[in-house]
Image 1 (cartoon, rainbow, N blue to C red):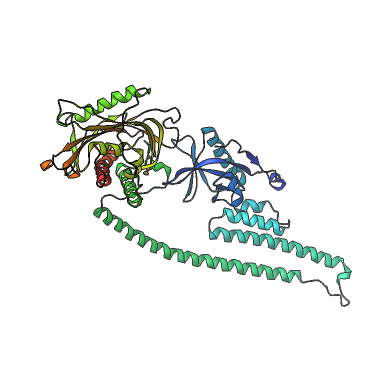
Image 2: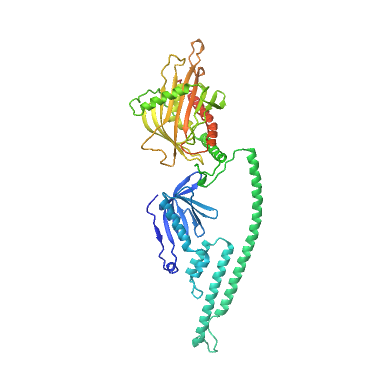
Length: 551
């Protein structure tokens, strides 16, 4: 937000003589654009009774992007947001937001002052000109232009024209009296026969009055025709609205989920959101469908570099104690069964089973999730490699808008900052976490000798603090534990991918970081987690099918 906007009052002599000035103001405010782009910075200008906006101050020479007259506008500060105010004229509403309450109050006061001081309609403008004062073409044009900006209907326009006609008629009468007086007192204006040698101003005045009356009568007739046409269209619209209402009722019966789009920021995520849980879920579900469609047409990145085993070199890093402790905890957590602890099976598809527990922290849903799956043709090392490596993440993770590796701690430990795609009406999210991959040491008490784990856990960064930008920070703990099972081939044949199977255990605890209806989040989890796990495991199987086996 700039600090160079200023409150400027007009010093026009004609305006000051009649007791009112036009307050002017300009500056940068956040303007709600639409449900996709949300709040955007715009250069706002208040001048000559018009509130207009530009994309930036540098664009003011290329024409405004939109403008509304504030003479009949309603300026309303927001009930909960102390920095926001709405300016509305009929059905047109501008949602504006200042950087601080003081700046918001300054804008509101100037807008209200402009409405109070400027007056409305042609009556105030016309009172500035006496009936005996000539309206020059420039003044008349200015007054009529201003009047047409302020008026709202054809009837008001006809009334304004009648007022202007009355003024012109009075001026013509005055001029006629003046010329009659001049003719009586100036002998040179008479010819040899004693008749006046001047134009018949009186006849011209009568003709002008008749012409003006004819124009007004024609305009009144036009108003009547428009009114009749308006009535026909109104009845037709009522019929169309009724048809649409019935069609929507039938659609709701056939499809229980329907997207309801609201253009106002009042329908954004937050405790004061005007969306109910069902509408919130419909909006989120449709947004997720759109992401899937984009993902289907997105070209997959091809990385032909050979995969190499990753060995730990992170023990000297300040985060290492936390990384080691949480990774061991998550491995133990993943190995525990689901028979105890209140796990509920909520999704099942062949070998894949997903369990959850319903938990909330400070009113936010943080339901722990555990998924078990079996994938043929890949090893645990390959599965964890594709889950960990940033080279492939954009291929299988369709919700990411931007991914940055902030720090490469070692070959097996990275720190990621991810910005996730926004799904209206939820706010955009980001996540900052370390990711660590390792092979689990051999355990003589266990049959398997090949287990790999990837553990992701939220961390902090002074360079990228949480919730300081447009994004809400997600806090997460995720682990992927993969165990390779080998079915020995007969007759000492070479092991192929047909002989290997990967047992996958996926655990996650995600804090969304911001308010959203609990029922919506749980419905989204139930829908998206199974799709995510199937998408990821299918991606790995497809990538590995023609490559050498990596144990």
